[in-house]
Image 1: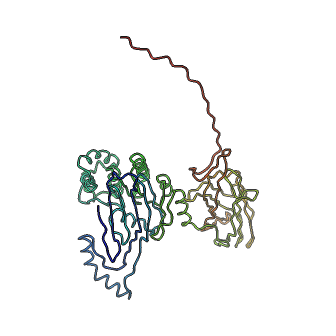
Image 2: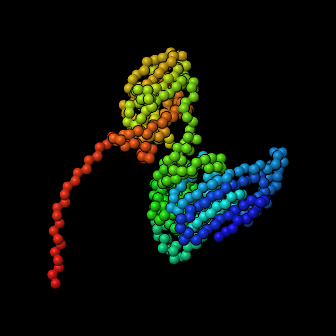
Image 3: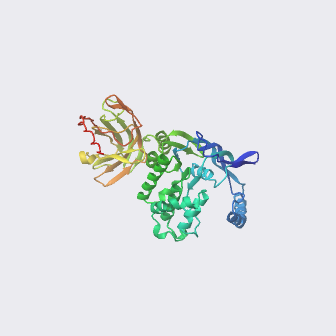
Length: 446
């Protein structure tokens, strides 16, 4: 157990590890957590290397401050962060670059102390924050496996029992006795993740580092994390900008912005909250470029109501040509909130639009027979073009629309909890048949 320290009358750090027998307690408790950095200051060194580096660079920093003519500037990477994580939960930490996600994980991993607030952790913590974290570059892969296990408090016998699984998962058996400083970034990540996932920490913290690996390895890691959380009941904190991975792996989400928690709750609601921050809603009228001015975009059902799942829908695009157009056309893309294209159409494939003169207002209507989208947010991306002159202009802002919840299968309400991209018409039948009576098993004769 590690107690708190006071600095300037505030709690600067507190890590508490109660016995694992404490049932019913959260695995992670974060209370009033803040982290301040003083830009340009000579902060207290945390290691001999940092002390030497700070001593050598001090004259340059002083010269820079004199040149700027100002003092040091405070920067709060985290501001009053509060949340709890229950044992066995998989929580996605999401937010834009600079939101404070990596700083939060460094505090939870005890790499850096907080300025105020406290963190309570129950159980052993394994972190995978950046390539090479926790590895000694001069040691071989084999030696680093044992070193990491010892740092987690495992005995040599426990490490040896997991050794073959780690090597098989990482796929670096051929280079196991090579110093890891000669590993590629992909090999580093393979071995580091294999060690963190297989040495049975109660809490596993994974940053965006998995993006270094190839697609096959990323899927392998996601499968392992799901197995770790569901099969072993371990707690996972996962930071990623891949929202599909977040939704596949996590059940809860914490959305961060400018160092503060903006949302806590279900992962689907958290992703929608994050995406609403990332994309501007609607299309600014009178957007001009490459001979076209976009006036408006709309999505409605033929009766004028909002489009619902499986209903016909109409997309109307109104634009003005600022130059003569020989053959006006439109590329229309319907995408989900992650930018995945669900539907695309080139209007010139279906109808050769007439030529237009400069300043003419044109409305193009695309009637879609069915719109079998699951409830949720979607967006329309547009590219206006003149095939006759081989020019095109893509609208910089996508138009967003919402597909509402609606009954589809009889009275069953199709809600946002359904997973996938589209709602397909389906019918279900169940046939039953009586099983023949089984003859009693013959009794052995004595």
